[in-house]
Image (cartoon, rainbow, N blue to C red; front, side, top):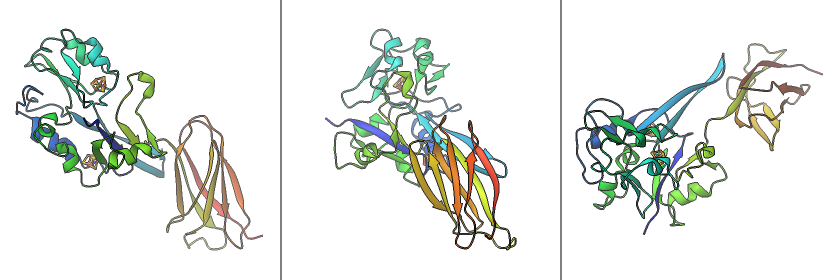
Length: 278
Ligand code: SF4
Ligand code: SF4
């Protein structure tokens, strides 16, 4: 028996919403009993993309975070349900029974990820099923995964060591979303948006020339990482630990090194770091 799950690489998501449209196309107005009743023709699909702006003007970045049912191993929705209206299948997919769950609003209220929608017409809590009706019919992956043009969504058997989803789960960048919910989410995320710091490098004696390819080092927290400024002289580091102290060091041949502390707290724009000749 496979153990189905998703790995979501937020670094690959461009916010195109193809997954959302595929979900609407598969479920909007289409009844897939006994796995799921039809999604209403208007209203949310069962995957959403949370878009956020990071950094500080003028150096900002946009992140897109796909959020859907986390197929929890200890799900709150299941605990809130009466009469076996929510089950966790042996393959790991959490299903809200479209008949038994009628009228049980508390199922929708029990999800800390906010991924259950309430179908007012059917008086039914509804959410992603990982397209279990298709998997049961022999499909290899859900519609959203098939529709994703950047492979940000990876589906497969977590118990198959050769599967792409297993490889993603083994990555040292794999994290679960809000593990503090205690619901043991089965989905993993790669490159979740975190605190970031950005800046620009410039030469004092060559103000019209972008300081491209300059070595920039970030030290502090649990790591030291280095990068090079891009063709505009800009640099960016992401995934900084929330409470940790950091320092940026900039070094270019023929110029004095510059070090600058990263302001503590949230995200930071360091402005322009001007390199002087000795
Ligand atoms: S994410 Fe929410 S809806 Fe999905 S299994 Fe967990 S508690 Fe249930
Ligand atoms: S289809 Fe893929 S790239 Fe597009 S929004 Fe969905 S997860 Fe992101």
